[in-house]
Image (tube, rainbow, N blue to C red; front, top):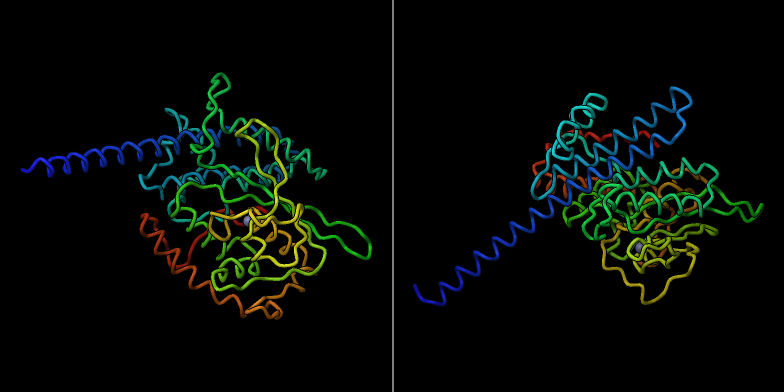
Length: 353
Ligand SMILES: [Zn+2]
């Protein structure tokens, strides 16, 4: 064998070893992040006063949704992780006895949102007065626990290693010009999952199921220059977590992708030309926040317009012809990750609010 070929073979071998090692590290991070999330969420859940049976049922549904989401992302990972692998010895049996469904449905049912989106719902519920600063404060405290493997461990993970984290959250509301009264705030989180394929799958699923169809329309047709236009007086403010510097959330302008998708929103602060988005359309917290707003405020939804080639027309149900395409694309990606997709597309925990 020629020396150069020897070198090439050696290089190839080293690259393979490195790739295997990187994948091993990714898997270890996924497992540690998943367990840390489960522990943190469970602790947070126990702080909620469970006054009656209905409240208990809702809290249980949140825990099940979080477990299912983490197991789902484990199962579609490049090196799949089984549900029991997320728990230290024996603990999975305890959880399985109390919450059997996520253990049974993680590879047949799809999540409708990320575990972090469920956590955000819970935090907003706990801070029931809707005070923005209190919500951000509790999120900051919770993020610290998510990133700390144990209370006695002083190492805080590198943010890039954490797999279920949302860097940005946002809130939106409508202010009635007649009464000057603001609606409740609708909170959303940026997509919290690692991996390009995982992110794409989640955006397709969101277009099919989770988002309001007007938002899904804007995201789906973004590449063709289409958009949606909101009626006047819808406000939006996004916040980036300061966890990298151990500081609180800071208010940030929208990215240019959100500005191009969602017309006539009063962003606080306004957009900045240089706030370029390196992430895919639909990745931002605004998509979830606006979806909740439109799902709740029918008067706003009724006035949403589709913007096609610069011209406005009322947004109608006929415009949601993209769902079949999303299903086709999602199915391909899910099958490539060995997900057992059934013909009638089962979703997990989509009625919890
Ligand atoms: Zn954005």
